[in-house]
Image (cartoon, rainbow, N blue to C red):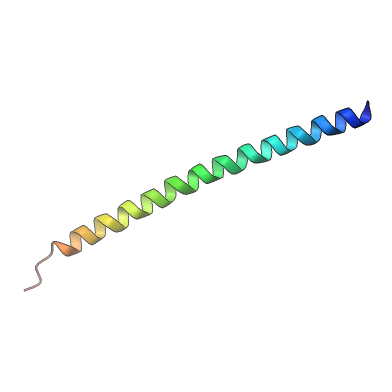
Length: 52
């Protein structure tokens, strides 16, 4: 019976760790998308400038 409890506890721990890693991955994707948008916007603004 101890083995079953340990296995279930281990499985739950791994499951939570995987869920946390998935959340971290989603947050990193959001962050990278935001950074890319900001870079694109700053490039668009500087490309439209006329320094003459």
